[in-house]
Amino acid sequence: MLDELRGFRRGRRLSEIAAQLGASERTIRRDLGDLRSAGFEIESVAIDGRAGARLVERTYSSIAVTRRERYTLLAIASLFDVLRGTPLWEDVSSLTRKLEQRMTPEERAEHATLGDRFAYVPDGGTKAYEGKEDVLDALLTGVLSRRVVRFAYRDAQGRARGGHLAPYTMLLYKHGLYVVGCRLREPAEGREIAPGTSVTMYAVERFTDAEALRKAPFVVPAGFRITEILNGAFGIHVRTDAAPHRVVVEFSAERAAFVRARVWHPTQTFEELADGRVRLTFTCASLIPVVSWVLEWGPHARAIEPPALVADVIGELEAARRGYG
Image (cartoon, rainbow, N blue to C red):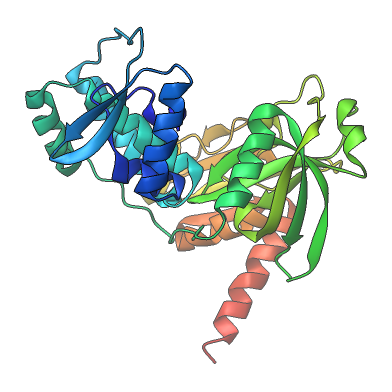
């Protein structure tokens, strides 16, 4: 209840607090009375003609937010719309409402129009997280508080799995949430995870149950860096013990400028070729996402190395051609 009131300088409507906490307004009124009895100074206020409450805090942040910064925050918030229904989206929405509390009436009026001045259009569809609130809360608690999570999971083949997980990091990829962590045989193993222990990637929507264990902390191995196990623009396949692949792809002159203008992988290098073509070289852990990436370019990209990549691309092209008779 206090968390829902903190930071809202003008207060919040009781109906809004009730909806946020999944309780009735009658329960909210009773709990507010209990908090007042416990010594918290909470005023009853009217907000847009509706009953509300305001927590009287001794200090307020005096950080000035410029017009451009407000616009930037709104733009960032719009990126989280793909996570609607998750605690992350709810926290961003709460932060936006708290920001509005510190605006003048003129600033709030302008802020209401800024949504028409920035648009984020997700491609490839978004994932649905309805009904996963408890699961997401447990995973976020595990990541933020470094607590082992007991979980149940259904993989891409529909197989049920479960056990204990030390969730190191949560990441967003193609509008979906993933957790990178170390599978544990028992919670106590989380207290001393050896450097170099393999990690696994889990899609959040496939968790069927999760619980952050109160008395089961874990310690992330020294030297762990999430950026070192990912593959840049080529998916989220975590690295294995296998040697990385040296990839070479040539691009047509028509697409050369576009290719050079982006960072596709931290290890990338470019080589200018005759007639305006460009050769891109990089190393990555898995060829699976690279095959799809090369195919997306159609006739403008040609895989050169390694032989396995060339064979996979040719195989996909031939299979697609057979589908047309």
